[in-house]
Amino acid sequence: MRKLAALILLTVLASLGFAWAKEPKAPEQEERVSQVTKDVENLEKATFAGGCFWCTEAVFQQLKGVSRVTSGYIGGQTVNPTYEQICSGDTGHAEATEIAYDPKEITFAELLEVHFKTHDPTSLNRQGNDVGTQYRSSVFYHTPQQKAAAEEIISELNEQKVYSDPIVTEVVPASEFYVAEAYHQDYYSNNPRQGYCAMVITPKVEKFRKIFADKIREDSVAK
Image (cartoon, rainbow, N blue to C red; front, side, top):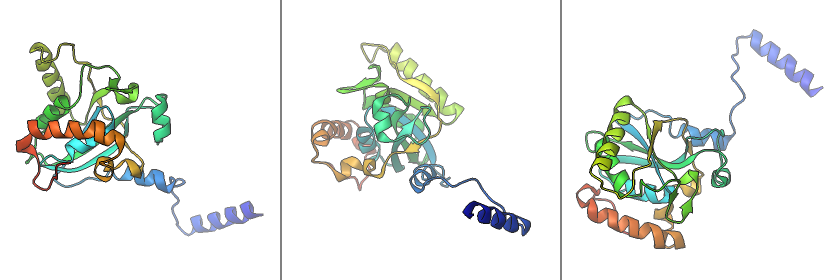
């Protein structure tokens, strides 16, 4: 009876000119996707993976010219994956950070420099004790120019033998980026005394701040 009544109602409304869209996404899914698909005037987008996104987020958030850093998942086949699914390594996604930046203040090449100097690009599918394809080193490019810039810096680093082993960073086109669950966002800022943060992220951030002292934003507070 409910189905029949609903069908009659839809028919009547359609005859009156009402347009019907597909069934809406679950609120959490809608929020997690829409945050990163909005166009922001004068800002460009970069997406990197280099291990745990708690670490990479904490680094890029401190750079001048960076407007927003979002932790999420990219490069896999599962739609709207959860953190638990990502950790299994079965979805194909990488933990990544999507960076909204002002190219007038910081260039993509400078972001690449930070990316390659703040993780190990020669370690396949792992960073330290974090092991799995979800921790792979990647540059997900959004334009042909980003692709060319990434390939150029990798070639230069290999030619100069900056690392003892070849770089294994993948350079691939950006696919759908799914925003990670809310508790992952600003994780280091919100949990600086948590064990992993204190033992892994704090030393990384301190090293980063020394190397890129001239690029640290004034409102960034050292941990």
